[in-house]
Length: 362
Ligand SMILES: Cc1ncc(COP(=O)(O)O)c(C=O)c1O
Image (cartoon, rainbow, N blue to C red):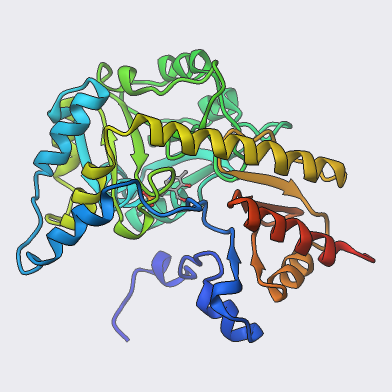
């Protein structure tokens, strides 16, 4: 065997949520009958016009994509009221996290974030050779910003604030995030991961884009994978000061953002009514699911997103397995908790039916 890095050799590969085809095979189910609520994807396809726009791109598949993401970048800059130079695109926001950790991590450094939060923060820290520091959430399943601040030490180069937080769906008001940013030394990069930003309707919440373009050490991450329903095409973006983006680009592999992804993202922009429809449908469905879980006496975190984190107890693993055998896949999160993505009305009905089936008689 070649000599692998010991910290990489000790890893188990990242496990994506149960895949539809695997569950269909294991349980002898028809894939079209399976409800997959594991990955916080949108329940509908892409925005109007996207499929048509993308089909034109496929004929040019022999050409590399536009490395500058020029058309998309200029459209996004206008939409966000920032400069083109404030933006950097990635093959999903996970790729941007890898690039951030590559640029700022390494032996003798650490990356700080809340826990539970997005599992990829741990992976990117390990891949980059950094230590990771996981700071427990508070009693209400929100990030503990004071404890995060206290965990930053001389070796910290990156602190990640996931707002809203995955898997809990909880948020922090903008004034609390901004006070946190103010308290972090400029030598530490604050990454504000806003993957679920578009779902939030609470008036205390605000994106940190305008702060990120001013400060030398703040970057906001966003994605087209969630409300824009483009998860398959791997496109996310970072917003920050132009000089910071220039440094981060040094750790980016070229030509990694596909032309299909760029074109699909561009075609999704400028459709505020569609965005609002998806947001408000998600909010109504979340209220319904939260109400139904509450009626069943199941404790939950207060979600502002397209998923709900709820407590199933010691038998979470076997309950989720029983639900899977009925063709409904949700995600056990470790401990006594699970996370369900909000689906369409029929998927949510199937979720509650499978949940009741699996919990009956326990
Ligand atoms: C908090 C958070 N950040 C980033 C991502 C990754 O998104 P992308 O598909 O853009 O890599 C996810 C996806 O689940 C997420 O939950």
